[in-house]
Image (cartoon, rainbow, N blue to C red; front, side, top):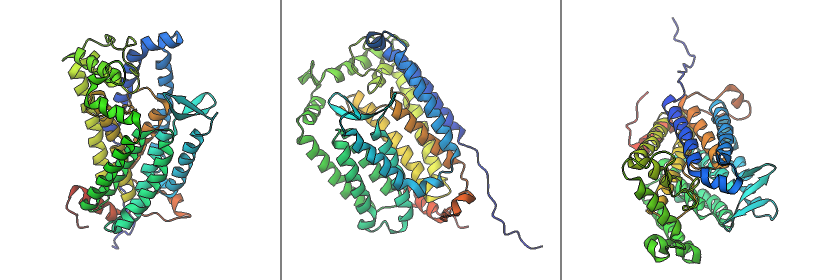
Length: 404
């Protein structure tokens, strides 16, 4: 009997544990958005459920995006990653056009699209992550070269950073730089190169801080919050009071006092402090454990991906969510200077919720480990690159290569 030459494909289910964690985070976020915004919504709009209704709409669109990206073969994004990044970068230019954008607290970060507002910086973080996954997967065997590892990524980052800083959006700029560095390292770049780039990036951050008085003031307030308790230090001091009031078990859901117009942005950037106040240390720890579970599943999906592009994309999504969550929590607990980044899946925000849900859809898609569909081969052949995926795992996690 002649041996079969047909390729055997093993079908895998979506990562159900990841999906359960994300749905739990989203549901919990809806509850906390309502709890944190009920007073401010009633004061501003005469409707205590205003932000809850808006966020519910964002969640529904986000779940639709999650389903779409979980169904659409992620291999297709490899071909169009550069085009997608160019489109979302162009949207950053449109934000700078008077009449098309909406400003808040001195920053122009939103595009008016009919009844909706879009925050292009959230789309750019997603697009840049896809571009990095595409570029690194195609050049993974040559990352020992400085020119290959860093030239193109740094040039692209410089263009994006220039547009982001015009808004200005310093937090998203730092996040994009962090994602770039982590993904290049995960792809197999030598550690000494990462240290050098990290040192240069730290110097540029310090330069950006010292050349703008309001950024310098934030740093000085971070070092000494009591130096201006009714000015620059007001928000972080109120957040710390909120945490302190929560103690071990909290004041009970809905029992926060700081949301009574004392803490600005209670339902957006500083929602974690309301969680600490109402649910205490135990509730905050449970939320942290859910994020740790999400990161664990994301890393597992990256390790078991069927292609280097899928592995790097899974790692990029995981790093993006983890970095944003860590920065947000660090800011709220006065461990980092104040920056305007939302807490993933929890804070109020439309574009952020939709992009994060789409990102989770990609993770679920990659977790199935399916080969590219036949229609993708019609114009451009994309192989599964199993050897490259194994190299990614071996270099990043020091996992011994298996001989097949």
